[in-house]
Structure formats: C-alpha cells, structure tokens
Length: 417
Figure (cartoon, rainbow, N blue to C red):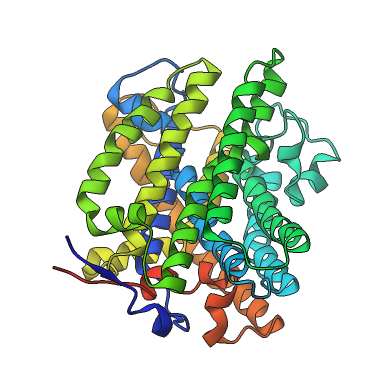
C-alpha cells in the first residue's frame, strides 16, 4: 500500500494557482448537466420509468449537480470546519459574503435578464413579484416556483442557502462552545445532519399535494444531505493537516484510487436506476447513492497529482468556465424554447444519432458564451471582490477563496509506491 504523507500541507497553504483536478470535476459536472438537458432539443422529454440505456443517461444528467454540491461542501465548508476544530477565529463574514455574492450574482443576473427578454416560455405570464423573487434567488423557497422562468436556477438557491448556513451554524456552535471541537464532535454533527436531512426527505415524501411534495423534497432541508459528503471530506483533510495522519477511510480511498472508483460504480448504477422510479422514497434514497459516489470522486481528485497534457489542460479550462456553462446552456435552451425549434435546431427528433447532434450543438452554442461570461463578468467580479476585501494572494486558503484558488491537492502530496 502506498503511504500518504502531508508533505505539501504547509507549503501549499499559500498556493494561488488553481487546482486543475478540481476544475476537471467542475467541468465534468457542468458537462453532465448540459448533456442531460440536450435531449430536450428533440422536442420531447424522457418519461419516468423508461429504462433504455440512453434514457437512463439523460435522466441522470442531474448527477452533475450532486457533484457540484459535494464540491461546495468541501470547498466552502472547509474553512469553517478547520476553524471549529482548531478554535481559531471563523472566516471573516464580510469578506466571505462579498466574495460569495460577487461570484454568483453578476453572471446569474445577466443570464436572467436574457431569459426575461428573450426566453420566457410561450403562454407563461410573468407576474411582477417574480422579478424580485428570481433576481434575489428566493424563488426556490416558494412552492411551485422552483423552476419558474429560468429552470436551472433552482440549484443556485440551494447553493446560496448553503453559503448562508455554513457561517450561521459555525457562529451558533462557537457561541455555545467557544473552545475547539474534537474531530468526533464534528464528525457526529455532520453525520447527524446528513441522517436528519434524509429522514426529513422521506417524511415529506408522503405529503399528498404534488406541488408541496416536490417542493419539500427539493428544498434546502432535504438537499442538505447532498452537501454532507463534501463536509466529511473537508473534515478528513483538516484532521490530516493538523495531525499528519489521515482518517483510515480517507487513506483507503486515496491510496487505492482505481479500486475506490470501481467501488462507486454500483452506487452510480443505483442512482441511475432510482432516477427512473416514480415512488418518492425509492427515488430519494437512490439520490444518496450519488452523494456517496460524489464524495469518493472528490477524495480521489484532491489527492492525485494535477491532470496533465492537452486533455487535462482542456478540461481544466472548461472547469474554469463551468459556472458559465451551467448558466448559459439553460439560458440558450430557454431562448430556443421561446422561439420554437424550427430552423434553429438540427435533427429535431428522438434517437441516439439526434441526441449526439444535440449535445454537440448545445455545447457549440454554450462554450463561447461561457467564455465571454468568464472574461467580462465573472473574472472581473472575482478580482473586484478580492480587492474590496483586501484578500492577499497568500491568504487565499484561509477562507472560501479556495473555491477559486487552489484546494487540497495543491497542499497534499501522496507518496507513490
């Protein structure tokens, strides 16, 4: 067995380069969502219960969203987990809030403006109250509004709620327990939140009203479970940093990456199969299989050397613009839906061949817009936030800025046999 050593921990804390492996995961997550949505260009949708191989793939494009949530749990939750374990000061709330808001809202508001102007679905009447509701990302808190106007924005509300929950929970814990927490206390806390979230989901799955049933199962209390694997990864890394010894389960996954990835294949298959089941309990239970698989994938990625070569550079570049890919693929689809497919979408029919054409077509439309969004909107907003909060490059690992600049695999070296 290869022996892991945290030799890069101290040197890597000040690393400012991005982690390419994490960017590759972002790219994979964004592309999974795009390819899942591309099927809509056929003018039809997949019926739940259809288990043809192509339909299983399409139905589970949302698995990319679960990977995004696991990454957020790890990257956003990490600084708060470390602060609670060490007893050190929590990340500065003002700087944290400014960076989170500027990372999410500028590009989102631009995409939302385009949808309001050109992408509202035919026959949809937009009420005045939906404008501020959507602009503030509060729509997911209102039953029946989760996918109104810009259908992909429901995940952004959940991300924002997680961004709010992390400092709120950390502050509450610090008020009750000013001293450093033990690793056992933090682990029990995360696992308890995960269990309660699952139980909540199962409980509300029995609500008879379909609107409230869907809303309660896909709103934040239920979706907290999807962030928990990332939080456990953050805890394991914090333990490794402080003691020089990773937890056994983390070490087993990191030192046997191919076995670990093979072991999660059944979880992915369970998740895929569950995505075709109409029964809420079965469907929601299968979603947890994706959560476990996402956590394992994150561990493998952050403990490997960065992907190299042309493919690694290409995927890393896609990861850099992954937020734009997620936003603009949905925006493009909305505009196409609004204007109809005739003359603008090739191969408007179902089937594997048409699906491949649709994937390439949507990707070709999305990548230029995502690139422009990164260059002219997202990157300037990130730079402004850093200047505004006086975030020096050497301090990026001390707060949530690790999302943009170099997570753990810039800090952890894995000794090879």
